[in-house]
Image (cartoon, rainbow, N blue to C red; front, side):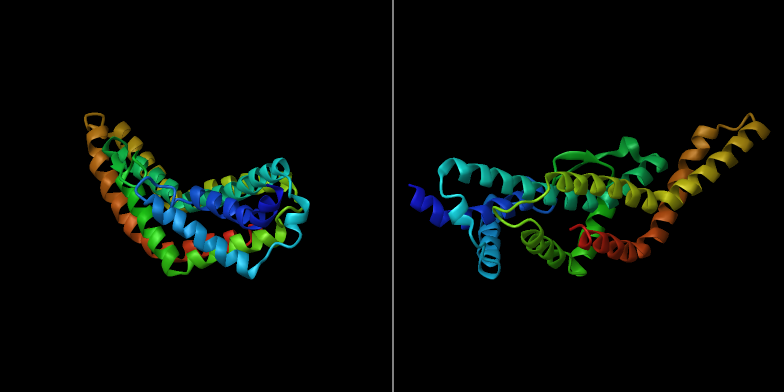
Length: 249
């Protein structure tokens, strides 16, 4: 039994890390993604990384079944942390779109996202899909592959690595997600702040005016206009996010 464990352990460890990484990514963690596609892609990446980065000395250190189980759990945790960090950065654009949509008054116009089976604002979903297309067009999938390949150098299989640094990376990704989403929505938030001040002054000058009914079409028109102005900047925003992900490890 230990002989078979020792022979299959290097392949299984790589499979555990790549599978956990893919399971946390937004592109493959959705219920609409076929399970056979996820499994086939995980096996393909395992063969690829196992061929170009063979783990040396893994079988000698983890031939026992209990030790192999601990190594598998650790590799799955490592892949899950990497995928979670990439997912947080990826959802920064969606969160920025949600902030913009709520400022426009689209909070009650939520729709069900078919990829996640969760309610989301239409503008946030639009920004999310547009960013995904720009990310793939800019070679973002190659960046994700390099991220996994680099993880085998920074955190080798059956080797010593710092779990605290891994957790710190996930926390840094969460803070970066909030920063990027606020940077994307900052022009819209500033414009609506000015609009709120103007409407407040008009409410004091013209008490008979219904500010609530007047502000709704103004918010929608201003929001759509600013959203059109923000869309061309998504390309530079995508490059900034890709640069941050490249420095994750």
